[in-house]
Image 1 (cartoon, helix red, strand yellow):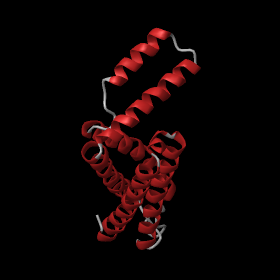
Image 2 (cartoon, one colour):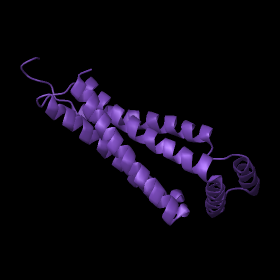
Image 3 (cartoon, one colour):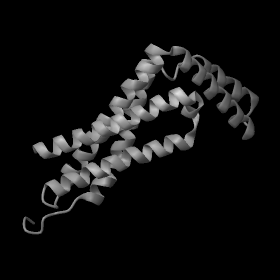
Length: 176
């Protein structure tokens, strides 16, 4: 892998990680309940993908305007992996080490939201009770759960990265 691919991607990933960290800390300080807002999760996902696309485009420019599928995907993946890893570490620090009570509060909010949603959709009482009992026994913000979420997020982002790589790749007609 060329140095420019790695350095551009790492720089973009670190920038993404810093931005995600700032957003996470602001959400923590301003309103813990913002962690339960689905639309905020969608916005952050879009921001992560945009950073991956920008990294791929910057690498393509650094390579003279042409980039292979492999290099486009690699630059995207390094960026999103580094950025979301930094964000995950910050989440672990906040919710598993610094303020586990905040994690408990959020777990309770998630249970409340799930209960409301299931009731709204007319789920049977037995199904609701089973789901809530299962949820009460787990901590969505434990170190293990956050690492598991990171891996799942990375898999989803990798699939999206394949689409990005197909869109960004540009073959040099002189080498074809």
